[in-house]
Length: 389
Image 1 (tube, helix red, strand yellow):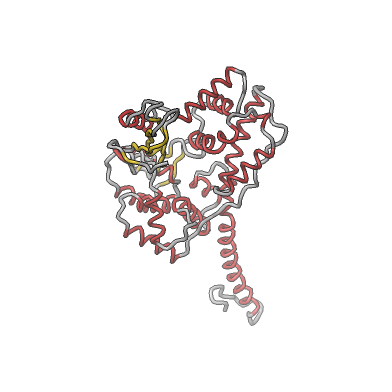
Image 2 (tube, rainbow, N blue to C red):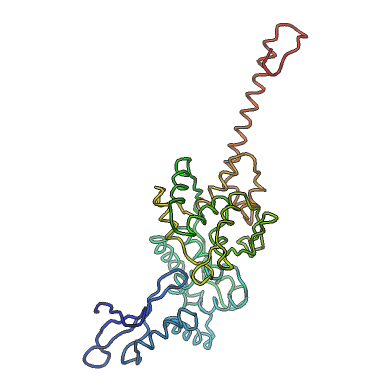
C-alpha cells in the first residue's frame, strides 16, 4: 500500500491501491478527526467502487464529527444486528442494545459503550451467550492484560456479565454453561507526595503558562474534586456567598455539595468568566481533554510517570485530611463524595497513625504525672502537676 497523501480538504487523505476487478489502481479515501479526546482514522470508501471523491469524504468527516453518521463498521454491525433480530437470535450485541433501551439515563453509559465497542463487541458481539465458553473469556482476559490495567480488564468482564445476566433474567436467552468469574480486585493504589515533591510540583505549576492546567491541578489538591467534576463545573455550581461547590449528578449517583475552602475559592475567583464552564474548551463548550498539559507539569516537577496527576492529587488531599487526626472517616467520606464507606477505608490507617500519635502524647503526659507522684517526698504533700513538684 502506498503512503497516505493529504488532499486539499482538512483531515481527508488518500492511499493508492490496486483496483478491484480491473487493471490499474484507484484511490482509497480516509478521514482523520478527534472524538472524545481520541484521534480517529476511518476508511470511507474507494474511488471507483464507492464513487468516492475528496469532497464527499470531507462531508462524511463533518457528519462524523457532529455525530450525524455512523462509521462503515458500525453500519455493518447494525445491519448484522437487524438480521439477528429478524432471525430471533439474542446475540451479545442485541442484548446490549436492549439493555441500554431499558435503562434510559444510565450513569456511566459513555464509558460502558466504549468498553463494549472496543473489547466486548469484537470478541463476542455476534455470539449468543450460550455459544460462549469459558476458554473464550479467559483468552480475552489474557489478551487485555497485556495492554491494559487489571482494573480495566475487570470492568470489561463485569460489563459482559451484566449483559448476559440481563438476558437471562428477562428470559430472552439461555446463559453460558459456566459461571463468569471476575478477576480479584487489585489493591487500591493511594498516591502520596512527600514535602519535597509537593514543593517541586507547586513550583512547576507556578511556572507553567497553560491557563487551565495548573489551576485544575491546584483545585484537585485543595478540594479533592475528580477531574470529570472539575471539567463540567459551571459558574452557577459555585456558591461563593455560602461557601459551597454543588456537584449535580456526581459519581455517587446523586447531587452532592462540598465546602469551598479558602485556597479553592482563590483559584476559582482568579479564573476569567468567559463562558458558562469555569474551565471551558473551544468555543466555550465543555473541555474534554487536558491530560497532556497536566502530565507535562508532572514531568517537569520530576514526579514518577506512575503518579496519576488528577487522581493522585485527590488522594493527596484525602491523605492529608486523614493524617491530620482532625477529620473522622464519616466526614472524609462526605468530603470525597464516596458512595460507600468502603472507598474511604483506604485512608483509615492514616487516621489510625494520627490516633497513635495522640495516644503517645497522652502517654507522655500521664507518664510525667506518674513519675511526679512517685517522687513526692511525703504523704499529703500537694504535687504541682505542671512541673512534677
